[in-house]
Length: 266
Image (tube, rainbow, N blue to C red; front, side, top):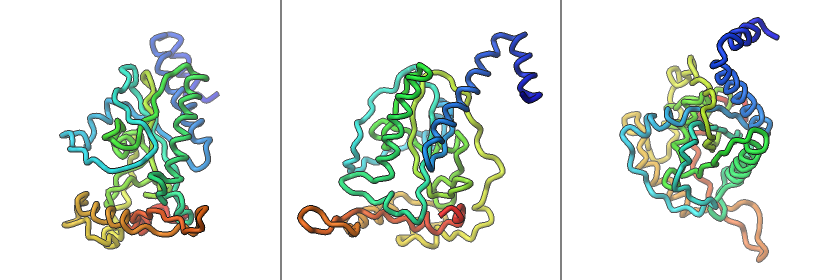
């Protein structure tokens, strides 16, 4: 047992009210460890109140409705008891592009995150008696602004390409979140990680539609590329039961794949 831990235990003996803090910190660590026991997953915890006071909610943006067939039910109400957010991200390496190909309104990588969210929900209830709510990806379906949640939790920072940059994986990470009842001890935002300051801006130069006018990201311009990707599906290299090529949406990843952060983790 470390000196710091012994000291903390001694303090809680004389201050019983501190026991909750110790329990929350211990539970946070256990939840993160369980989430990260899934291959290629990083997880952290944020306070829901902090996320809702984050950049994307100030002022509350107009949420753009997207046409999507993603197989997930909308969430209309969040439980009042849910005050913590478990944010977890899956590594999408450059050498496995199939994770990002969209077929029948969803992707292989996102299916995996959805299944993992349900597994974590069952584990939290069984092992800790904590109710939780896996959130849909889209804000208009009742989800969170995931990049805000990830920044508050310490999973990464927002890069010049408007993507989350993880210290190890760069922007090659996909996010989901779960609301958890009660007040978990949150993990801390990252400090001292600012790779864009010394970068030549490869991400912005690589954009095929120049979606960074004046150096600032334009969602409106970016959407023109997204619509083009949907209209111009590519082949997956497989055939269906009728011997026809299976077509998939291969969304543009130029600003992501040219980012030098995390390139050693292909």
